[in-house]
Image (cartoon, rainbow, N blue to C red; front, side):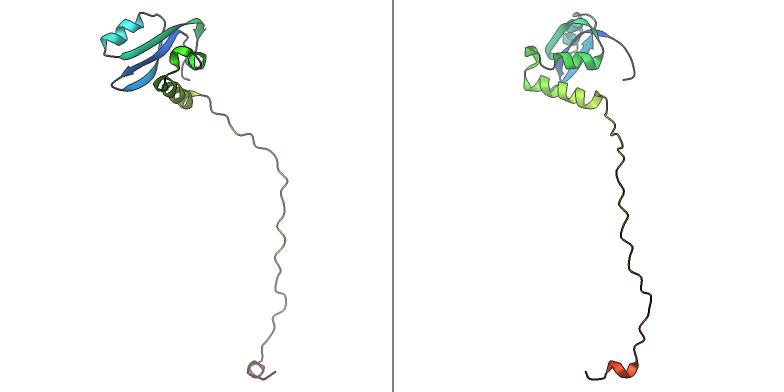
Amino acid sequence: MATDKLFTVVGTSTLDGVTKVRFANDTLRTKVLQKHGHTDINLVELDTAMTKLEAVQAIQSGDEFASAACQAAIADYLDANAPKVKAVATPTATKKAAPKAKATAKVAVDAELEDAPF
């Protein structure tokens, strides 16, 4: 994340049919969201101030956010903002490929023997 800001209020709201996760430091944010046309506003106050990722993880299993739209918004946020785990390179035994057989002797085919019967 780009910032280390902490939030005390987190939840979801729907605007034009799209549900998103919302962050604030005061529950008065509800009034601002209503004023701008948001519906299904569901904000909860956290016990302690948290980063955005911590806050979303904290509400993920909350009963207030059990609806499919809320869970989809939370999952989308976590998918987009969860830290990516880098794969650790493990040393592996390298197998050497078997050497290819080399043609060391060329067989000269006699033109007369080509058409000879067995």
